[in-house]
Length: 56
Image 1: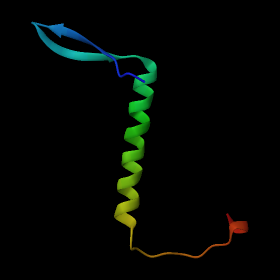
Image 2: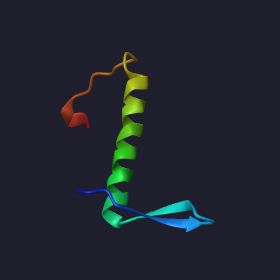
Image 3: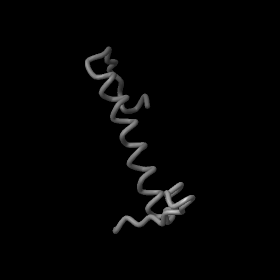
């Protein structure tokens, strides 16, 4: 997928970039993944609890 953004200008400076829905969705998914990765890394090495698959 080719990223595409359409800038909107104010006084010859870009003020906002309008993204198509698919690009916006992809960016939001990547951002959510990055947040989850930071949570996992912060909890690495912490207390663990054994559970059975049936208990979930």
